[in-house]
Length: 357
Ligand SMILES: *Cc1c(COP(=O)(O)O)cnc(C)c1O
Image 1: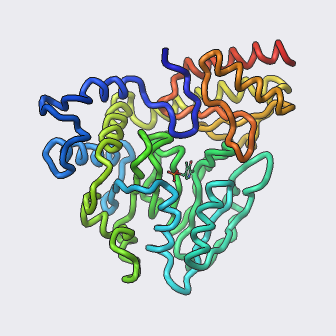
Image 2: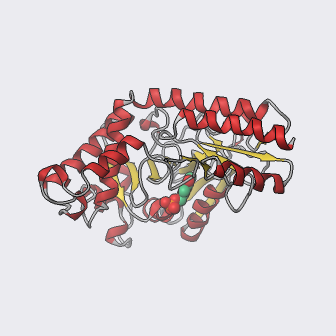
Image 3: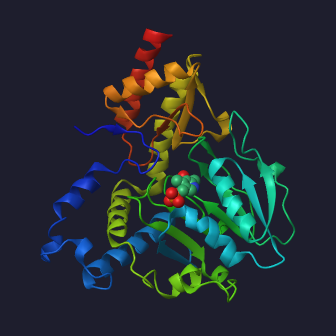
């Protein structure tokens, strides 16, 4: 039996996608080979590669002048590549600190150049992201970096700041809602939350930005290299891109990002209503910034939280333990997470409160 998998990442994938991958695992379209055994420059994989880029461009309505790249090293590598490529000597980059992931991006920026923390609410509880009004921006900053959804704390930007070069770590909410890509200079996301399996990082970059990179940056670490090579400068992670291709097809068949947003908001609203309906559970993020992807909450004592997580797992509700750095309970309900799983969790929350409240 398949579990209701609330893991934050790697996370649940659509069952239809897993079955399709299974069906063609040994023999991809009568080639006698698995897609993962084939050349990354052969005709079968080339078609997958091109379709995945086209699907992402279509789903996000990406304008001319942007490239869609498949890279490796996760979002964590992007933390370093962004300042290496885009933060010139003597320039300052603005970063917002909204929590653990933003802080990691900031740390890499500081290793490589001047960083201004434009707003810092990273350690506040209840957790939140900065308001647009509190940003203390630098004139002529190389870029402004934000973390669109803090996966650990469950705080999400609902409205984005305006900036000539806005950069966003969207690892845990990309493709969960429509987006005006033209407002961003660069968007990046590790695949393992909302896109597919671990192993590929999606980067969407305004082409002109890549030209800023200083000559001293090694070839593999330049965005321009990956733009010029159509993400085939070195061996692209073919199987993760293939899985991403299947996920993008699934998203299109489900009605695209408007439909996803509707479903995600419905799932999240139900779960937050269950949390708010009783004093037994307390939401971790301020209401205006509650994530539709990672729903975080607490019970008054940690023993009860441990009991909640263990009993939920026995009922096939898996992966509810909060991040080890903060504890508590976290229900990650990405695009692929079914609405029935949210209903099952809500029923369990009621039973658990009745028995322990
Ligand atoms: C998971 C996550 C990361 C780290 O991703 P890796 O692929 O493990 O490097 C960075 N930012 C956010 C918002 C995340 O959720």
